[in-house]
Image 1: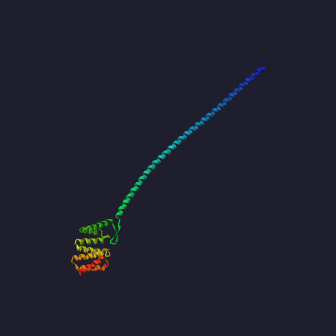
Image 2: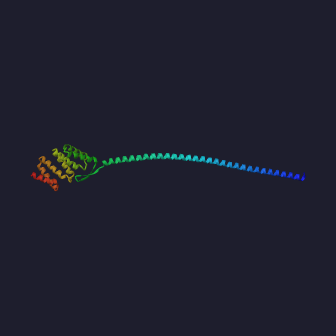
Image 3: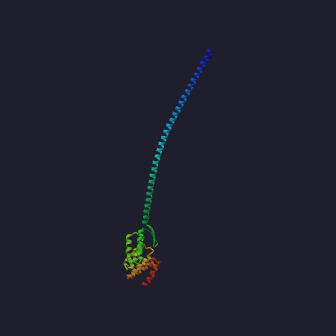
Length: 247
Protein backbone atom coordinates (compact mmCIF):
# COMPACT_ATOMS: atom_id res chain seq x y z
CA UNK A 1 0.00 0.00 0.00
CA UNK A 2 1.17 3.44 -0.71
CA UNK A 3 2.32 4.99 2.51
CA UNK A 4 0.83 8.36 1.60
CA UNK A 5 -2.57 6.87 0.96
CA UNK A 6 -2.54 5.07 4.26
CA UNK A 7 -1.77 8.23 6.06
CA UNK A 8 -4.63 9.98 4.44
CA UNK A 9 -6.96 7.22 5.51
CA UNK A 10 -5.79 7.54 9.10
CA UNK A 11 -6.20 11.30 8.98
CA UNK A 12 -9.72 10.96 7.54
CA UNK A 13 -10.67 8.47 10.20
CA UNK A 14 -9.36 10.77 12.90
CA UNK A 15 -11.31 13.65 11.44
CA UNK A 16 -14.49 11.62 11.32
CA UNK A 17 -13.98 10.49 14.89
CA UNK A 18 -13.40 14.06 16.04
CA UNK A 19 -16.51 15.23 14.24
CA UNK A 20 -18.52 12.47 15.80
CA UNK A 21 -17.25 13.34 19.25
CA UNK A 22 -17.99 17.01 18.71
CA UNK A 23 -21.42 16.22 17.45
CA UNK A 24 -22.06 14.02 20.47
CA UNK A 25 -20.84 16.71 22.82
CA UNK A 26 -23.07 19.27 21.12
CA UNK A 27 -26.04 16.95 21.42
CA UNK A 28 -25.22 16.31 25.05
CA UNK A 29 -25.07 20.05 25.71
CA UNK A 30 -28.42 20.59 24.05
CA UNK A 31 -29.97 17.80 26.15
CA UNK A 32 -28.71 19.45 29.35
CA UNK A 33 -30.19 22.81 28.31
CA UNK A 34 -33.50 21.22 27.48
CA UNK A 35 -33.47 19.32 30.78
CA UNK A 36 -32.73 22.48 32.73
CA UNK A 37 -35.44 24.31 30.83
CA UNK A 38 -37.89 21.55 31.66
CA UNK A 39 -36.88 21.53 35.30
CA UNK A 40 -37.20 25.29 35.44
CA UNK A 41 -40.61 25.10 33.81
CA UNK A 42 -41.67 22.43 36.25
CA UNK A 43 -40.45 24.58 39.12
CA UNK A 44 -42.43 27.52 37.83
CA UNK A 45 -45.51 25.38 37.36
CA UNK A 46 -45.12 23.99 40.87
CA UNK A 47 -44.63 27.48 42.26
CA UNK A 48 -47.72 28.71 40.42
CA UNK A 49 -49.65 25.68 41.64
CA UNK A 50 -48.62 26.30 45.22
CA UNK A 51 -49.46 29.98 44.87
CA UNK A 52 -52.80 29.10 43.29
CA UNK A 53 -53.50 26.63 46.08
CA UNK A 54 -52.70 29.26 48.72
CA UNK A 55 -54.79 31.86 46.90
CA UNK A 56 -57.66 29.39 46.64
CA UNK A 57 -57.33 28.59 50.34
CA UNK A 58 -57.31 32.30 51.14
CA UNK A 59 -60.30 32.82 48.88
CA UNK A 60 -62.16 29.99 50.61
CA UNK A 61 -61.33 31.48 53.99
CA UNK A 62 -62.54 34.89 52.81
CA UNK A 63 -65.71 33.37 51.42
CA UNK A 64 -66.27 31.43 54.66
CA UNK A 65 -65.74 34.60 56.68
CA UNK A 66 -68.09 36.48 54.38
CA UNK A 67 -70.67 33.70 54.71
CA UNK A 68 -70.36 33.87 58.49
CA UNK A 69 -70.85 37.62 58.36
CA UNK A 70 -73.89 37.17 56.13
CA UNK A 71 -75.34 34.60 58.55
CA UNK A 72 -74.65 36.93 61.47
CA UNK A 73 -76.32 39.80 59.63
CA UNK A 74 -79.25 37.56 58.74
CA UNK A 75 -79.60 36.58 62.38
CA UNK A 76 -79.41 40.20 63.44
CA UNK A 77 -81.99 41.12 60.83
CA UNK A 78 -84.29 38.40 62.12
CA UNK A 79 -83.83 39.67 65.67
CA UNK A 80 -84.50 43.22 64.51
CA UNK A 81 -87.56 42.05 62.60
CA UNK A 82 -88.82 40.24 65.67
CA UNK A 83 -88.13 43.28 67.80
CA UNK A 84 -89.87 45.49 65.28
CA UNK A 85 -92.90 43.19 65.37
CA UNK A 86 -92.89 43.38 69.16
CA UNK A 87 -92.65 47.16 69.02
CA UNK A 88 -95.47 47.33 66.46
CA UNK A 89 -97.61 45.12 68.68
CA UNK A 90 -96.77 47.27 71.69
CA UNK A 91 -97.68 50.42 69.76
CA UNK A 92 -100.92 48.81 68.58
CA UNK A 93 -101.78 47.76 72.14
CA UNK A 94 -101.01 51.25 73.43
CA UNK A 95 -103.13 52.80 70.70
CA UNK A 96 -105.98 50.44 71.55
CA UNK A 97 -105.71 51.25 75.25
CA UNK A 98 -105.52 54.97 74.50
CA UNK A 99 -108.61 54.68 72.34
CA UNK A 100 -110.44 52.87 75.14
CA UNK A 101 -109.33 55.51 77.65
CA UNK A 102 -110.40 58.29 75.26
CA UNK A 103 -113.77 56.62 74.77
CA UNK A 104 -114.25 56.25 78.53
CA UNK A 105 -113.21 59.85 79.06
CA UNK A 106 -115.49 60.96 76.26
CA UNK A 107 -118.37 59.11 77.89
CA UNK A 108 -117.65 60.96 81.11
CA UNK A 109 -117.02 64.35 79.54
CA UNK A 110 -119.67 67.02 79.98
CA UNK A 111 -121.90 67.46 76.95
CA UNK A 112 -124.06 70.31 75.79
CA UNK A 113 -127.69 69.99 76.84
CA UNK A 114 -130.62 72.08 75.67
CA UNK A 115 -133.62 71.79 77.99
CA UNK A 116 -136.62 74.11 78.30
CA UNK A 117 -134.84 76.71 76.18
CA UNK A 118 -131.71 76.69 78.36
CA UNK A 119 -128.31 75.44 77.21
CA UNK A 120 -125.77 74.10 79.69
CA UNK A 121 -123.17 71.38 80.13
CA UNK A 122 -123.90 68.16 81.98
CA UNK A 123 -122.06 64.96 82.75
CA UNK A 124 -123.45 61.80 81.15
CA UNK A 125 -124.34 60.37 84.58
CA UNK A 126 -126.04 63.61 85.53
CA UNK A 127 -128.14 63.54 82.38
CA UNK A 128 -128.98 59.87 82.87
CA UNK A 129 -130.16 60.48 86.45
CA UNK A 130 -132.40 63.37 85.41
CA UNK A 131 -133.88 61.44 82.50
CA UNK A 132 -134.53 58.48 84.81
CA UNK A 133 -136.35 60.67 87.35
CA UNK A 134 -138.42 62.29 84.61
CA UNK A 135 -139.28 58.85 83.24
CA UNK A 136 -140.56 57.82 86.66
CA UNK A 137 -142.75 60.93 86.81
CA UNK A 138 -144.16 60.35 83.33
CA UNK A 139 -144.94 56.76 84.31
CA UNK A 140 -147.26 58.19 86.97
CA UNK A 141 -145.13 56.98 89.88
CA UNK A 142 -145.27 60.31 91.67
CA UNK A 143 -144.06 59.21 95.11
CA UNK A 144 -140.99 57.57 93.55
CA UNK A 145 -140.51 60.64 91.34
CA UNK A 146 -140.39 62.87 94.44
CA UNK A 147 -137.57 60.78 95.86
CA UNK A 148 -135.72 60.68 92.53
CA UNK A 149 -135.86 64.45 91.92
CA UNK A 150 -135.07 65.31 95.57
CA UNK A 151 -132.01 63.03 95.40
CA UNK A 152 -131.00 64.58 92.10
CA UNK A 153 -131.02 68.13 93.50
CA UNK A 154 -128.93 67.00 96.49
CA UNK A 155 -126.48 65.05 94.33
CA UNK A 156 -126.02 67.83 91.76
CA UNK A 157 -126.50 71.16 93.58
CA UNK A 158 -124.87 73.15 90.74
CA UNK A 159 -126.56 71.30 87.88
CA UNK A 160 -128.13 73.15 85.00
CA UNK A 161 -130.98 70.66 85.33
CA UNK A 162 -131.94 71.94 88.78
CA UNK A 163 -134.62 74.48 87.74
CA UNK A 164 -136.39 71.77 85.74
CA UNK A 165 -135.79 69.20 88.50
CA UNK A 166 -137.37 71.52 91.08
CA UNK A 167 -140.32 72.14 88.75
CA UNK A 168 -141.02 68.42 88.31
CA UNK A 169 -140.39 67.76 92.00
CA UNK A 170 -143.07 70.35 92.82
CA UNK A 171 -145.47 68.74 90.36
CA UNK A 172 -144.85 65.27 91.85
CA UNK A 173 -145.54 66.69 95.32
CA UNK A 174 -148.69 68.39 94.07
CA UNK A 175 -149.84 65.05 92.64
CA UNK A 176 -149.34 63.40 96.05
CA UNK A 177 -151.04 66.32 97.85
CA UNK A 178 -147.84 67.55 99.49
CA UNK A 179 -148.88 71.13 98.72
CA UNK A 180 -146.63 73.03 101.12
CA UNK A 181 -143.54 71.14 99.93
CA UNK A 182 -144.62 71.72 96.35
CA UNK A 183 -144.97 75.48 96.95
CA UNK A 184 -141.51 75.61 98.52
CA UNK A 185 -139.90 73.87 95.56
CA UNK A 186 -141.76 75.94 92.96
CA UNK A 187 -140.54 79.09 94.70
CA UNK A 188 -136.99 77.70 94.84
CA UNK A 189 -137.22 77.09 91.13
CA UNK A 190 -138.42 80.68 90.47
CA UNK A 191 -135.70 82.12 92.67
CA UNK A 192 -133.08 80.08 90.81
CA UNK A 193 -134.34 80.82 87.28
CA UNK A 194 -137.09 83.46 87.05
CA UNK A 195 -136.73 83.54 83.27
CA UNK A 196 -137.09 79.78 82.89
CA UNK A 197 -139.48 78.60 80.20
CA UNK A 198 -141.61 76.86 82.84
CA UNK A 199 -141.53 79.74 85.30
CA UNK A 200 -145.11 80.87 84.43
CA UNK A 201 -146.37 77.29 84.97
CA UNK A 202 -144.56 77.19 88.32
CA UNK A 203 -146.38 80.39 89.46
CA UNK A 204 -149.72 78.96 88.34
CA UNK A 205 -148.93 75.71 90.19
CA UNK A 206 -148.23 77.69 93.38
CA UNK A 207 -151.66 79.28 93.04
CA UNK A 208 -153.24 75.84 92.54
CA UNK A 209 -151.54 74.56 95.69
CA UNK A 210 -152.82 77.59 97.63
CA UNK A 211 -156.33 76.94 96.37
CA UNK A 212 -156.07 73.32 97.55
CA UNK A 213 -154.91 74.64 100.92
CA UNK A 214 -157.98 77.00 100.99
CA UNK A 215 -155.66 80.01 100.89
CA UNK A 216 -157.83 81.97 98.47
CA UNK A 217 -156.31 85.32 99.34
CA UNK A 218 -152.82 84.01 98.74
CA UNK A 219 -153.92 82.30 95.51
CA UNK A 220 -155.47 85.54 94.23
CA UNK A 221 -152.29 87.45 94.96
CA UNK A 222 -150.18 84.79 93.23
CA UNK A 223 -152.41 84.84 90.13
CA UNK A 224 -152.19 88.61 89.94
CA UNK A 225 -148.40 88.39 90.14
CA UNK A 226 -148.52 85.79 87.35
CA UNK A 227 -150.45 88.02 84.97
CA UNK A 228 -148.11 90.94 85.67
CA UNK A 229 -144.81 89.01 85.45
CA UNK A 230 -145.65 86.83 82.46
CA UNK A 231 -148.57 88.52 80.72
CA UNK A 232 -148.14 86.86 77.34
CA UNK A 233 -147.80 83.30 78.61
CA UNK A 234 -150.44 80.56 78.39
CA UNK A 235 -150.16 80.17 82.15
CA UNK A 236 -151.10 83.86 82.55
CA UNK A 237 -154.20 83.32 80.41
CA UNK A 238 -155.18 80.34 82.54
CA UNK A 239 -154.44 82.45 85.63
CA UNK A 240 -156.81 85.20 84.50
CA UNK A 241 -159.58 82.65 84.05
CA UNK A 242 -158.84 81.14 87.46
CA UNK A 243 -158.72 84.62 89.02
CA UNK A 244 -162.14 85.48 87.54
CA UNK A 245 -163.61 82.38 89.17
CA UNK A 246 -162.09 83.30 92.55
CA UNK A 247 -163.84 86.71 92.65
